[in-house]
Image (cartoon, chains in turn cyan, orange, brown):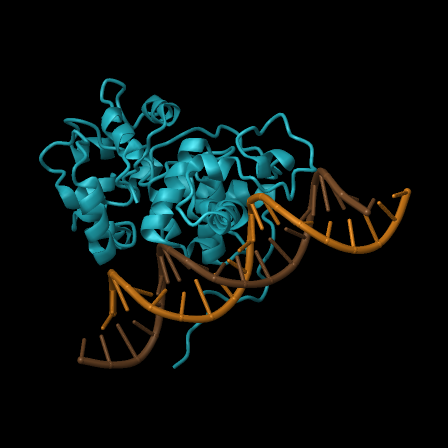
Length: 300
DNA sequence: AAGCCTCTCAACCGCGAAGTA
DNA sequence: TTACTTCGCGGTTGAGAGGCT
């Protein structure tokens, strides 16, 4: 039978996206919502394959993409989640609002993986963040320290190259990866707070574990729902089951485990969250619980 | 100054899972 | 049930930028 290509390669643009292409894609998705990637380029008038459009949107154009360096808390979370989940970047990204799986994957491959490998070699015991952030190795310490990055030697020695193009009007929106159902907030009420072009396909995180809520794009139920994964079942229920997220009754353990409900600990991140329209300010995450979680020695 | 090296990250590719007819 | 389509994931690649010699 053979696998049919996702699209005809002939006459297609490849490589870096132009500003114009970005604009076309962004405005199309804002008007029509995500999904139907295969037909999207044709309808939008783009000479790109659907896959490429999807990737560009998810990794770059999406309005809730968080730019800038990975914070210490985020890094710690990545390390812990990677320990737990392995190279399941989309699941890890689901816990880091505004971060994409590609970004985390890149960050791991270029920075964290190396750091951890180094520290693992030099010590048989699991590395602490202190070890990771202040490794004894001076292999690249010749490079001057950048003002803009101060967290880690590897970053400091080589300023992060920021090549992304400026996006006008970029602001944080709630997305499946960043929406956090707050106390006493029903799933549906969150849906209502999505902008129209997001409502078409975005659904509150809980919906990915609740079959039937999204009849338009049923596929969105899978992948991000860690509850369907045995490994996650075992580990996340065990690890997160004790946390009081302060959700209502509709959030059972399986819902809490949903990968697209972010698990975050950074106050600034939370404030950014609540600053967006997704979560009302008065409804806050139980930070104490999360702080306890990260500080806990029982974390893997 | 120029060539080489290292690093980052956007983009591509192939595959498997899930949905559909 | 099965053949096919579509989507999303993880691994990999390569262009571009900056540092080093």
